[in-house]
Image (cartoon, rainbow, N blue to C red; front, side, top):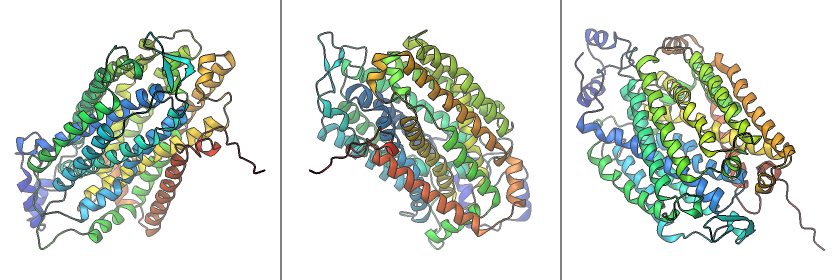
Length: 555
């Protein structure tokens, strides 16, 4: 079938009552919308893939800088570091709000391009403020004549309390590029729904392959340029955290004209502009379905349970595996290459394989691959950074498959007219589950595991009793991963079953209300506890992952 450009989309939108023969011919291949498949590699649409490349680069760069900044330079406790990262990632939990704005309030007849440009502008400004207005305080540990930190000598004890302001601006920058990403996701849903049943998922997979390539660029940038001794790097020189933020601010700024001139988007009919009511109605229709409710419960519960992880990971990386920034970045780059290969394999061979089977096999494979690397490091059998980092390389392919499968189901459930809001809502559920799992991890491993997994002194002392405590924390993490597989029946087996569930499952407004109320409660809970765990006055609370606060008794 000859591919059509976006103009085909315009015709279908302005003339919804197509001749019956044309509808049958267009949708006979299992496509969910008429118009034919869209060539996203056309030069006039290259800005669409550029959005994903830039999102991958910036999100990975921000995440890659966290280890050197929080753990090595500021010596922030691991539970605080994970919470600060969760606060940064919390912006992804508000995707639904940005999707609502994009779907409901077009600017100059466009719903995507203006918001993409605005989002990149916000990200660039925030990174610029960090680069030129927020110099870092002195490091926590004193640096010796060998240009290495002396972990027995503390030079700036207050450094561990100074990470919150950087996390806040990073979170705001994340809101900026996330707004651009939401608009890209809305286009992805529109494109994917015009693909045939056999090929549906190809555009999504390609977009995420490009995003992972952007991630590799972010890894290389941080790995080679932020690799000085102050960030536990292996070079005698290196750019500062502020300098890296300055470079990213300039690079991200380039995305503004790209968004405006290299993203092709049909102008909307000025006599029939979308609004908040129509967008919410479309999502309300989706949420009232029992099929959607089951998927929401699976995404939320499986993410909350399966995402519980040991908070010892960061300290193991630093103190026992002695991982340096460059080596960490190089292995992350290599694992990203394998991740792209995993996406390609999924796109080429696994688009029509059972989703449940793929998730079960990949979950088991990831745990089996992780066990030897983690436990041999914990008990001191092999403590080598190259050995320890090998695990990320091995699990990249199953991780890629699990990631993209969760994205496939969103396209099947989305309704026409509210693509951005539908995608934003369902991915918000997934992002929130990750945030909640961080809160649960901080509480469980902070409350019930002793000696403390977040105290760096325990890793320096390295006693057998503490090694056993760390090992049991990983056993619990693996158990949670397997427990999440019990929820797989809630997930449809494939595209056909998803559409069948949409037709046969009952509809009720109670599904909509339960989903929205539950999402609001989870959002408030996770946000509140993550904020408590990064504020200096409350980070000691047990509910926030600390060891408990000493109350001052007035005399």
